[in-house]
Amino acid sequence: MRRVWKAMVSVVSAGVVMSSVCSPVWASKVGADAESPDAALHDILPIRVTYIEAAPAQPWFLSGRVQRRYQIPLSFRVGGIVEQRFAEVGQSVAQGQVLARLELHDLALAVTRAEADRDAAQANALNAMRERERLQNLFAKKLVSEQDLQRAQTAEVSAKKSALSAESALQLAQRQLQYAQLQVPQDGVLTEVSAEPGQVITAGQPLMQLAAGDLEVQVGVPASRLHSLQQAVQAVGVDQPFVCEVSLRAYQPLNQESTLLYPAYFTLSNCSGVVPLGAVAEVRFSVTDGAVSSLQRVPLSAVWQDGKTAKIWQLVSQENGDSPVYQVRAQSVRVVRLDAHYAYIESALPLGEAVVAQGAHRLTEGQLVSALKAVDQVKAAKP
Image 1 (cartoon, one colour):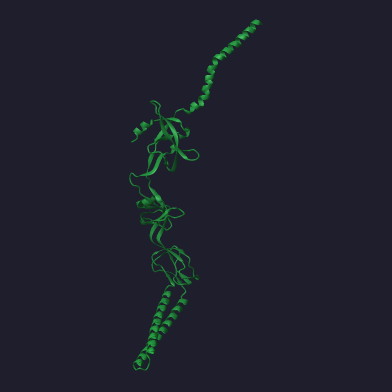
Image 2 (cartoon, one colour):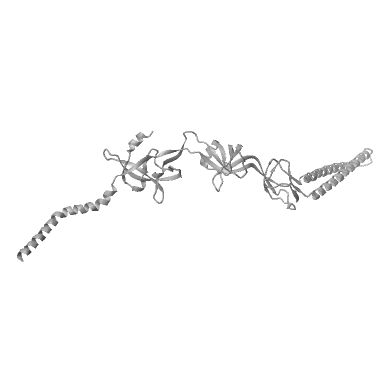
């Protein structure tokens, strides 16, 4: 028993000695494992590199509706009752064509009364002239006073003026009789018709709308494009197959309060195909060769979201001997538009700045990376 006890004590002592000897190694291993997450953050990841480019100027267009230059409301110049209507909405009409007519009875009576008033005024004028001549002869014989002669002269002048007024009233009544017919002032198309037989209307009440003049497209122009309006080259139908040449006629110097756009009017000419009123057309503008826009562009894969804004990774060179190493920094950008390959952005970074092209989702702020192709070599290889 004494020998067995001594053996057990020797084994336990040996275990204590081994534990004390191995404890630094074990502690070192545990410390290394504890530091392994921080070490992982400094792993150098391979990524692809690209550079911020100036976006080439893109052809641009504005959309609008086709209309006639003049939109003329048509109305009778006298009031009355509509007797007949001779045109329908959408009908093409020619200058001088009768569109509607009022009942003539009341207007004809007005002409008759004006004729009677004219005849009575002329008779009074003739009688006043005779009276003046008679008194003038009597005055020469000293049979009437000068005052009586002057009264006769004044009555003659008044009678002649009354006759002239009656003649003018007759002409006005005759014109109003002609105004009972609503005629087309110039060639065009009726876009609205609201007159119906039996309708009582007043003078100047709009009854029809005439679209006349050249075809044109009205568009809304943003303030940044006002200087480029002369570059319009053609108008292309969106919902109708036509192509027209265009020229700027005018634009309003004050923008619209609701849209902040400036209305501009482009005249259409030499159109291929029928151009119906109300059709939607694109006014297309040319771009000067070699022109660039104020935007920058990067590949689509370079842009990522942090839940609030769009960002790209900027590459900041780090000293690491012969092997180029870079640190990534997130830079906020504003994405203006996208196409199949590029994102067009606005950023505070200069043109030619190196950014991450692929693998952006794998990175964190301050991550060290290495380019699959060194940045300097890429710059040297770019044409």
